Length: 215
Image (cartoon, rainbow, N blue to C red; front, side, top):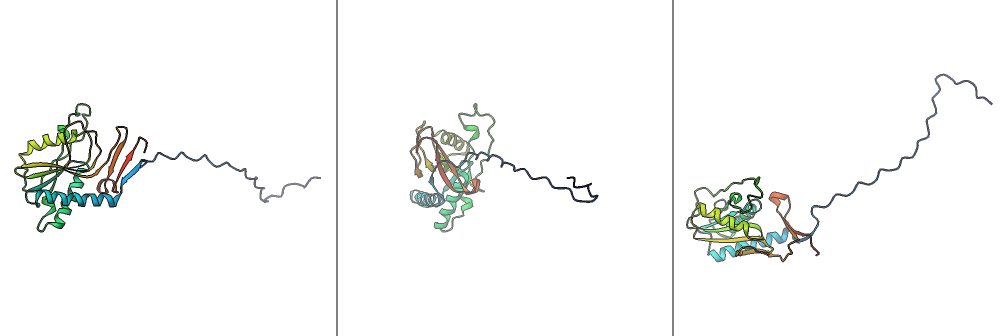
């Protein structure tokens, strides 16, 4: 039976909605922080405090002491060590203790990476390396080639009375006869493993993570 003609102005019937399947879940990106954390913020702080005290004990004070950080992460480490030394050594200005030593043009692998960014070598105002006890500061000691380059760069600046080395992590696998005088943590590794140091000044957090291999 007909329902009769359509009435003008009457609302049209809405279509029944068809269920839509949810989109497939996106793949979770790989976690850049994957690995085993071997040092957290507290351990990094304690390691630096211990190294600062060891430096003072060995050099018998901060007189004629100069800390040169190797960029990138060696520089903030040098500045933190300078502040800790100033905290316990009366009359020491941390700004006069720490500088930076760029080693880019002295690296023996420069021919393989010719586009490296050249950093800056900066000494505290009014200071030179001549006759000073210079402590080179870096984040990780590995083959020793970066430190060899640092020694060459330092030689062009002058003649220190003594040169020492402080590192946050020594992971072994030396290719040159170079040893650190001050070590935050000795970390045995395999060659397939990667050690990543992150600092609050450059990465927003203090941590040392080892990735790769089977740990």
